[in-house]
Image 1 (cartoon, helix red, strand yellow):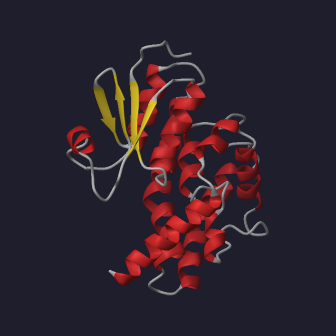
Image 2 (cartoon, one colour; image 1 turned 135 degrees about the vertical axis):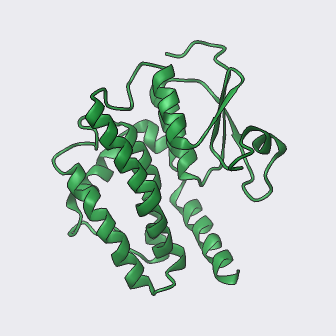
Length: 224
């Protein structure tokens, strides 16, 4: 367990999957922290000071040192607090976990977001584009409780926070069945396993709140 006086702070935004995955990691490690909610539109002087390059959340502050970008933060947390490892110890498995995490953030997340709130080419086209990407993750988790095996790990935190907020299935509130069980039985089984993990449930905002937020984002994009 983390020692008292670690002086850990997390700057985040409640609807940010990048923030949520960092909270999962801190909770899994048993690290006490202060959470500082940020306005991502009217950015605070503190956020601009700690992350002047990207001006985004999350930012982790530990003993005066600040680390931006969620993948880097997860690695830092894993290397700083050794209990309950997040990343695989095997070099190849670690490399593949990082590869698939990058795939989730750079491919699955943006395409899924388009399907939910943008869909310039039409909603059905956007959904099919997203499902083509989900097929890769379906294969990756087949036969396993979690992406890393028997326990929650790095890729589960990244994917579970991005798709989007798997447990709450907030896309259903937008009239979309993004990951139907008949097409993705393994991903749906994985989602059910995530639901059983208390620290994951603690980090997922209420479904109704997510739906309201996503509808506002969609309206803002359409009116821009």
